[in-house]
Length: 201
Image: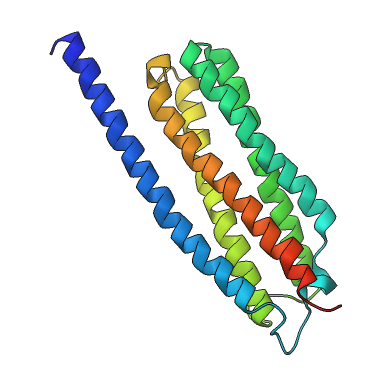
């Protein structure tokens, strides 16, 4: 196979990858939209149990949110470094991205521990608990998937299996990561801003 044809094949695969990732993001957006609409619909309709204003603490969630959104910035730096062929910088920025994402997940875990064991809120407590844990948990699940994929790419790069020629394909993972971060802005607004304003103390 000649080099020009090989380059054309790589471009075709990358194009298919972009289309596939775009379709995945559209489908996942529909799922998230369903959870968000359900959360908004049931705000303030729980007859028993704690309400959002009574148990949600926005301050630590803000810190977690800054960490997650910052991870999108470090991811961009990582992909640019890979495109330049700077593997050390790529690995450093990728590790930073993973660390920030992991911090967000740990923060979510701490919040859930408080809600479950201190405030008595579980997924079966009331409508608020059901919709809260479903929506936030669905997002956390996607963050975990993203972290696993980022970690896999980092491990492969450390073993010498990721090159600058792979930058286009690796950046597709960035599309997913940016999507997860963007969705969190919506989730945060719905749950911790609109949701808390929509319920009485």
